[in-house]
Amino acid sequence: MDLELAYDRIYRYAYFRLGERAAAEDITQEAFLRFLGKYGQLREYDMRILYTIARNLCIDEYRRIKPEALPEETAEVPGLSVDGQEERILVRDALSKLPAEERELLLLRYVNDESPGTIGKLLKLSRFAVYRRLKTAEEHLRKEMEAEG
Amino acid sequence: MKRKKDDLDTLLREAFAAPEPAGREAFLKTLRPREVSTMQMLRQQAAYIRVPVWLFAALTVGLTIAGASVHLEETVRLMVMLMPFTAAVCVLETKRSERFGMSELEMATRYSLRSVILSRMIVLGILSALVLCICAPVLAAAFGGGVLPVGTRILIPYLVTMSASLAVERSPLGRKNGLLSPGIALVVASLSFLFGSYNPLLVLRYLEVLRSFGLPIAAFFLLLTVYEQWKTIKSVEAFA
Amino acid sequence: MKLSVDRITKQYKNKIAVDRISFALTEGVTGLLGANGAGKTTLMRMMAGILDPTGGEITADGVPVQTEGYRALLGYLPQDFGYYPEFTAREFVRYIAALKGLEKKHAKEKTEELLELVGLSDVAGKKIRTFSGGMKQRVGIAQALVNDPKLLILDEPTAGLDPKERVRFRNLIAEVGKETIVLFSTHIVSDVEHIAGNLLMMRDGQLIYEGPWDESRGDLEQFYMEEFE
Image (cartoon, rainbow over all chains, first blue to last red):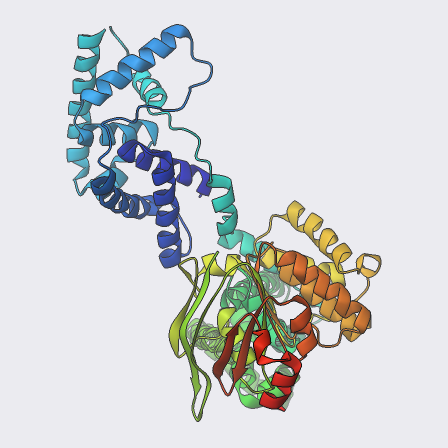
């Protein structure tokens, strides 16, 4: 599979858990090296393993840096209108009020496009539980957004 | 604010936009990420199979079709004698790395030498199967006798030669001597020639046997060949 | 990148060819000196992933030698190599490029670039069997570089080169060594003196010297003569 894409997905995941670009990138690379050292090549199906390695590395790192709920300074999104920017801030505010587990789920499912199967393996949940929790997370997010907007 | 569900991933994507990872390109370059699928590997090795091998296969098929079209009865026996040489050509082709001292270089590339040799075997196997699949029906149509008996009749000497050659080529003698496989092919071909001319009745008996048991016999030799190939693959890389 | 060799051992039935050798290399040129039979080739073969060690580990930035990930970083020139008789210099390098998984277009460009670099572009279409020993060796060097290796292992690369070729080779390796870990074996001391910042010396399967040559120990040539000859 495309390693660049895989890199971006793992990096994004680590970044939103840690809130530090450099730390996230270190973890991404470390995860890749560990994974490739053991398995030689990466297939889509193995993303779950790569995520698990990255997640464990994040947990270690997490204890050390104790990051904010959501990284303060994220990338510019080019081409967003003023409304769009406002909307983005609104969503971010809403997200920051969610529990970290729900943010993780939303990121994995909607941004990184991981299958519920992969997410389930990573979080040690059944697929059904992943669907259920996703629903809850979505509802929470909507509620927070309505409260803000 | 009301939003449709479809918007959710767009919104989340924007919210979760991370800064560009600065070290991505440099890091991935060190990994050399290009992966090569089995298909690509096969195509690659197919491209490096020497022209004479293709020519030999084409010649076999050509002779069959030519012989069949002029109803030359001897064509079947000719094929029986040609197939061992097809096998020998395939074995020699498989062993090229060792013969020409390319093993070490091929081993140090992305793939192991094993996968190089395995893909070569697969390509050559497919080629041989193709030859068989064209020749057997053509011969059966021209001279009767049914596809299966004719097919097994030309397949068995091929498999016998191939399994014997693979076994011999692995031996210390085979490593030193490059011409053992053609030698074996010559022996098998001569034997089948002698057998064919010795007593026509015996040949008829043999054909009877093939008619009833051709498939299990061929399957037995096929298994033997696969076993020998497996052992050959296993012995690769142990030599260094 | 860091290449680490950790207590690597190769034992044959009656003899230990490489005996618990450990060292680490980073970018730069390292010369591996030793007499014939000291275990240089065995060590290098293990580092190239084509010979299984009896014990110990070899890793490049943590990636073990047995993996495809490691081989992707590797360029290797064996001490003695052959070629399929129908190969031209160009076909040879392209064949190795294909086996190293280079994309076709890139492989073509890289091949031409490297044949130019080793001074063979005018005979690129000629069959290797018409080449002199030195020319064949240059083809070997080109194929080793085709995947922009991060780790380049050259077993007796200067064997068969004439003095002019030797100088060209030294310059080339010095250039490559700026961004790559280069390890080359030789029994010619002046090869090492000219290009290798770092030195490994082997005798009877063991490492007897490691690091830049310590001038206080006198002349390297002298030392080598006393040790090995």
